[in-house]
Amino acid sequence: MNVFDFTLAGAKLQALGSGALYWPDQRLLCVSDLHFGKAERAARHGGAQLPPYETHDTLTRLEADLAATGAATVVCLGDTFDDMTALHELTEAEALWIARLQAGRRWVWIEGNHDAGPIQLGGTHLAELPLPPLAFRHIARPGASGEVSGHYHPKARLRTRGQSLSRPCFLLDSDRLILPAYGTFTGGLRSDNTALSDLMRPEALAILTGAIPRPIPMPR
Image 1 (cartoon, rainbow, N blue to C red):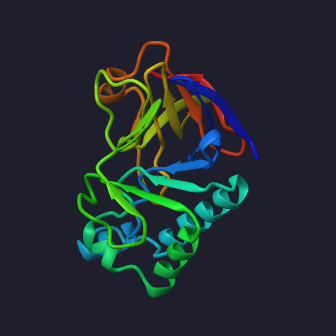
Image 2 (cartoon, rainbow, N blue to C red; image 1 turned 135 degrees about the vertical axis):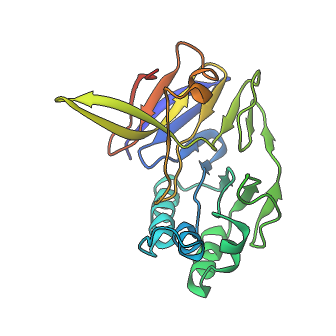
């Protein structure tokens, strides 16, 4: 399993190429912004007709990360569903799949801005999860320390061979970690957007997702 090892607030963590975070000492896997049901929601509102397989694809990758890490605890950092209607549009097969992944594990659903209410699936629903020295929440708070959050779907823009490419990434500084979106059809916010560049310290890194997670100075 290819990972990037780093430390936040004294906790030894691993960024996975999939966009998941693993905390080996706690056997904890954290993912953010799965946005299950995005294709269904887009169709419901007359938007782009996206292929209706994103929930299956996201669950397949999550199952692989659970198998690779052996995680005993899973934290979903909010916006697990694209909206609360999407929760009720899960197929029976998808709901059973989630139940199988939950079996024998502690599973925590963190409230997001897209799913701001109890998720009627197994596990625990929380506004945020303090787990010293870290705190898990959906949206970063200025001034926080040891914070793990999501929400922004950060991406880093790179220039290579005269082309501009964009890659989902973790953003890391001495105070916080912001996870990329884990969901298949999620968009992203470039790291040079002021919402992110003003939040992250000057020395921040962007850890690029992919087969081999790779850190670079955060593009600003």
